[in-house]
Image (cartoon, rainbow, N blue to C red; front, side):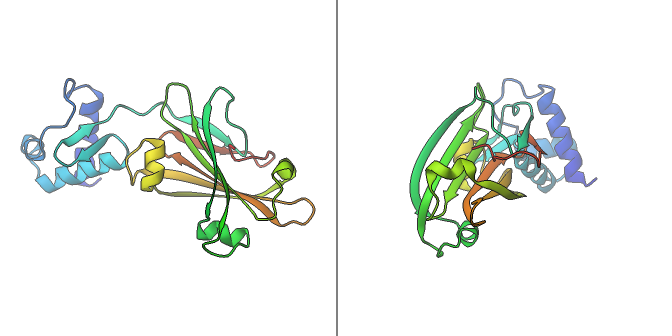
Length: 216
């Protein structure tokens, strides 16, 4: 294990043990480095690692803010519906689709198409799921329930600023992205592409290939 990883583990242990109770921020980097007899660059890298995992957040002019522990991890089965007691903020719009979505739906790059967005919030917790469902130009919204899920992909990436804002996390933190394509049972053409984005430190994904849906 690298030295900065050891220092990150030690800082996390102290945070979880309440050694910094009563403080909103960590001590200054030079003080932490002096106390541990390591370089300031080692402590700076250790703090960056903790920030990547959502334990702290560095804010210019304020220092390194200690974040509250994330809620317990939830197991989400995809495809499948989210629990009914979870609230969802739903919006509908027409906007340019991402290039990956436009390619699947055979839409010209940059063309505006229909998009349904749901931001799902478990009771007493920050938002957990952003689900953007993009509809092809020929999709009949009344017939979408008959569409057949044909493939899913799961990707790990860093949160964009927009997704971080909606999920109430720091931009750049790891998120999981699940993309599902649904096709017409009559023509076999893609009708919808749903992209679900979830904070990686709050969920574990269980995939059930016998069911349909992507949390929308």
